[in-house]
Amino acid sequence: MIREWLGYDTVELISPHAEQVCLQRLRDSIGSEWKPFQQRQVLGAVGDHSFRLMVRHGPFTQNMFQTLVYGTTRAQGSTTKIVCRFGLQRLAAVICGLLFTVGLLAVGYETVLDLLKTSSLADVIVSIAIPTGYLLFVAVVVFVGRVIAQDEPFILLNFLRDTINAKEA
Image (cartoon, rainbow, N blue to C red; front, top):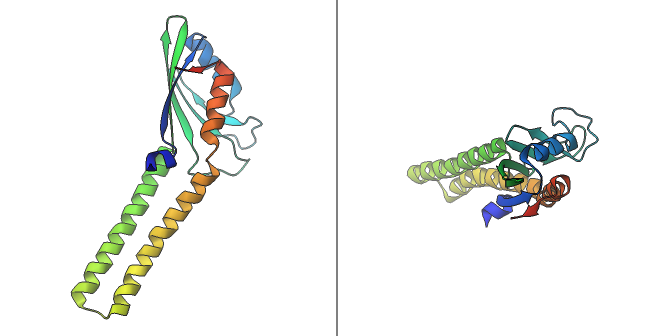
């Protein structure tokens, strides 16, 4: 359930075009993610047998929790098989994991310390509430980012279908 909510999914596509034709069509249809004023809806990079695509939000705005598609291509005779992995940016996933782990450790540490000190119940509640509030804040930030990005997998998949005439395998 969490994997789907975070946008992780794998889709296999088949294009009637040769591998290099598919990759060239993608190169011609996307904008660079490093240029702030792009007119194209989809930004990314295309390599020799792979690509990375994301939806453009605005000239100076970017959602850290947006969905990216990482694709690999493989020639199959006169057609091309494309394996697309949808998900968060790797850096975003690492940062989310670290922030959540720090929050959990803080809650556990404060709880154990207060129980060992046999503080008053009010002290224990306050020392647990602050790290718990931190965890809730991290969860809300991720939730808002994912809500903003909820249509991106469909946009990216439709872009691939239209650009390279791909159909699901």
